[in-house]
Length: 77
Image (tube, rainbow, N blue to C red; front, side, top):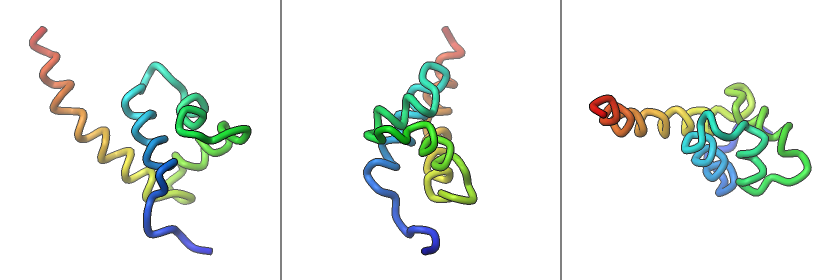
């Protein structure tokens, strides 16, 4: 089967929900919000595993990097 070359809409939504709610929602809750049903717990684990879904893990890292400048601005308060 191999590694997909593109992220699906659900995978992007999962990554976005995970990063924007870090510390507030766990992976299972993020997977449910992204549209994964009964298997949300398993899917959350798989999507965060770089051996299974390297593009999703990379996208999560990119989103976290984009949030750092925003969070650095909060140190002044």
